[in-house]
Amino acid sequence: MTNRPLAAGSTLLVDLDGVVADQLPRLCTYLNDELGLDVAPTDIDDWSYDVPGVDGHVGTVITELMTDHTEWYFGGMDPTPGVADALADLRSEYRVEIATHRVPDTHDVSKAWLDDHGIPYDDFHEEVPSDKGAVPGDALIDDYHRNVANALDAGKTGFLMRQPYSDPTACDGAHVVDSWDDVRSLLL
Image (tube, rainbow, N blue to C red; front, side, top):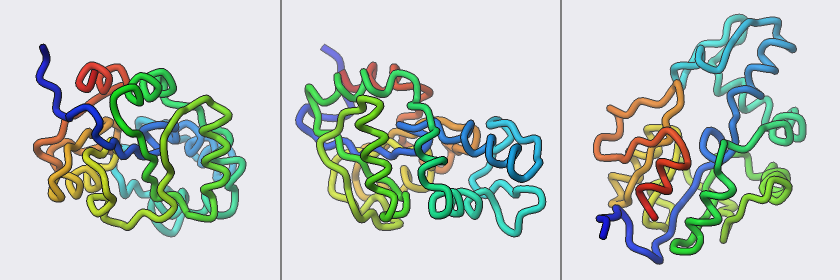
């Protein structure tokens, strides 16, 4: 018998961008096509990546895309490889709830995208505080180390889905995973 980090029946809080949805290729398409840059997903190696020619960092651009280009941005993202099958399998033992910092006005687009890609979940949190550790649940799967650190501080199990901008040293004690197969191996 394996020693799982989470009991069956627990609630998994799952982030969208960088975890369920592969956001970096879509973001880079915008940066390159609309702003005339030459940015690859691996170039965005810091959460506050400074975008050349933009007054602000990558978060400023993402906020603009969420509010001004919602359908294009969210609708054009591909699912992270293996996510639909992994979440279907995980739902056999856990409750799966989406907890995203996307702008609440975009949640209908997000839910439609999840449905269009056959990505199962049990609930979608309409309001998520900046501290994801405050969201009721037992574990958080997220790509942003600060969110995972907040979850750990709140007594939750943390899973950091590694991205070029993720910093595993900032969330000591988290399970660092590179894929949904890694998550499945830990939890099933």
